[in-house]
Image (cartoon, one colour):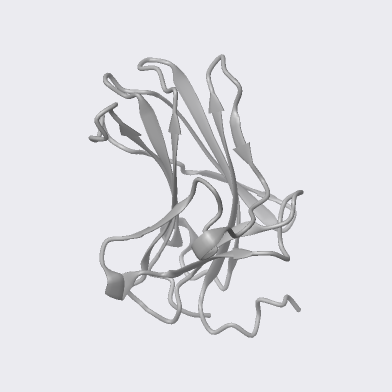
Length: 171
């Protein structure tokens, strides 16, 4: 029995990496809560406060270094949101690969519950092109690996790595 089982809501744990073409990759497999409970470089996001999932750093489950990004539906059927991290140095036309690992406690519709995507942005912070959704999923032990590859669109200078949980309220 997992220590996550007593929770009456969905819980999703993430570790993430973004391969930057011809440069040092952005990779993070350990997370430590900083001021306000957020790990360095990461923010939480939700369209509205009433549908915000609970986000926190879970210290006991990880893929290597301690800690993972956790998202809980918190018994809210409309929950939608999660974690974001902006990575700079993106070059238009170069290919990038997002690889994220996740564990989902009590999935209902896993392919709909878990969202991992790249949201390209200009130097001015506006959206460049359309987001690229990760969709290739394969099991790796207790975790699942979700990946996507895409070229950065014209005007992209950075990318938001977004890890969300949606419509997954409970077990």
